[in-house]
Length: 85
Image (cartoon, rainbow, N blue to C red; front, top):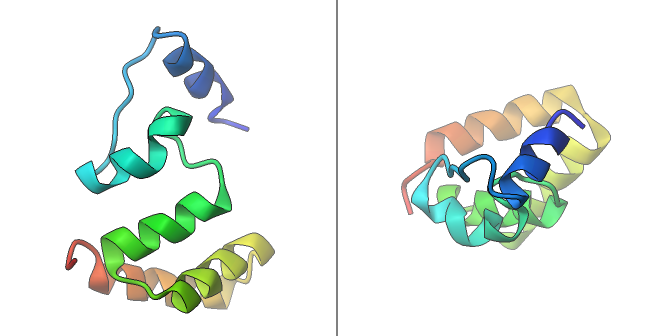
């Protein structure tokens, strides 16, 4: 919900779209640089950290169900692998 004003401003050209990494641009271009859909989380995990389809789905489920232990474990995996692709 906190990203709604940013999304609106970017959509109407009042704010510049910024991507944290160049690999995120094709994933987030449609949503003006804001991660909105669970599929975007999965694709980002695959493109930035080399997750498999199954691994990315585990990440998505952990985030969706807010399972802290699993989210912490997935965070460690993501941080260890990021930018290695």
